[in-house]
Structure formats: C-alpha cells, structure tokens
Length: 264
Image (tube, rainbow, N blue to C red; front, side, top):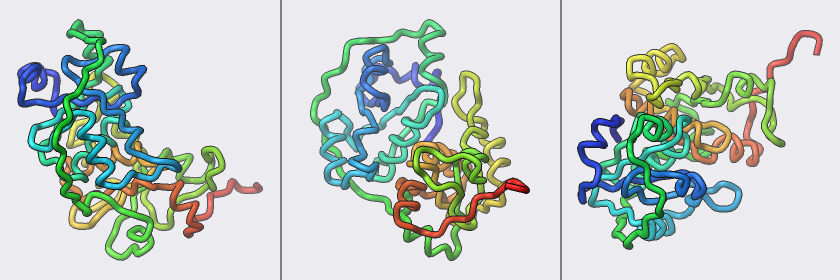
C-alpha cells in the first residue's frame, strides 16, 4: 500500500488501468465524488455486531462494486481517513497487491476547484480473486497469547485510561497495551496523515519496535485501521484486530483496571 497525492492521481485519472474507490456512505458519494469513482461503502463489509463478513462473501461484494484484483485501486476519503484506511486494509488483507491511498482530503479536492461528479457510476461486475494474507489481521486469541507481540490501543488517552467509555463499554484497556492515539497521526491540513518521519517518532516514543509484531485495536476497528496503515508505511509489522475493544470486552477477556482519581 502506498500513500499518494493529488498530482499522482491527476496524472492517471481517467486511465482504464486505474480503479478509484469511494468508501463513504452513499449520501456522501452522491453529494460529490472523484471522476469515475466506484462506490465501495466499507460499512457493508461488516455484518451484525460489527463482525467482518466471510472472505467469499466479501469477494462477491467487491465484484459487484466493480473492483478487480488485477487492476490497481486508489482509495480516497474525508479528513479523518477512517473509512478509507479500513477499505485499504481490507483490500490488502484479501490479497489485492496494488492499493494506493490518497493522502489528501476529498474535501480539499473539491474546494481547490478540481472537478467533482455527482452521477453514480453503474459498475460492471469484476473478477475479485481472494488470497487472504492472515498476517494483516488478528483476533482476540492472538492478543491473549501475548508472547512476542506489542498490543497498541489507538483510542484517545481518556478512553485508554478509563476516564471515559462509549455506550456500555467497560472502562480501561487490554493489559500491557501501549496507547498511540490515532489523532496524533492526523495532519489537520490538506494532507490527511502526518509525514512518515513524524509518525515513526510517535511509534518509537510509544516503545514499539520494527522487529516485533504489533496488534492494533480501537473500539470497533476504523481508528485502529489508520494506525495500522501508518505503522506499515513506517516499516512496522502491524496487524489489525478488527473486533477490537467491543469484541474483547464481549468475551469477558481481562481488562486493565481504569485509573481512578485520588479520593474517588
């Protein structure tokens, strides 16, 4: 997977050799998209309870969306990058070998006067051949085993410390996890993510090492997908725990007790 910019895309836009994938919800897609972009709403890759659909079901879905494995695919997204990072990870996990991610926001694409299209593309069924890369995905048992693995929590510091919880989630974090808040990796300007040297510094500061496997989680996967993407860009062997905190807590797995304020 490679991060690219507007110039890279504009040189290739309209070429029959490039597939462009929009992972956003349909209301976003029909409110404006890049020329020729296929609608591939990544939320549909997950079933009830947030579980990733089986590989053969996903292959059929990608085929219906018009995504072929023999052609390069460019993924773009809104400024937070969560849907795009999840789709890029999923494509690579299922074996697509040439995935690019537009590291500049679609919102900026539109505001800088570049052409935006509104008519939905009717995709032609494509051949999507699955070759699962198991090293890119982790489950709760991989985390529980623990030996030789760095566990990375991509949630906010407040969630990690147990000071806030979402919905009915228990407060706290997976034991021995290291906190790398995904927001530290967002650029906050036209570019979605910070430069590689800055992200590498964040990972090293958290005590992560390139020679150890890292398993990344958040609450339900999208924020962890951003961290996983950037860790892999920086040369770290990162896997996404797509079930994340929701799955971990549902299984009754061990939780590091939330930090309490003195006197509470």
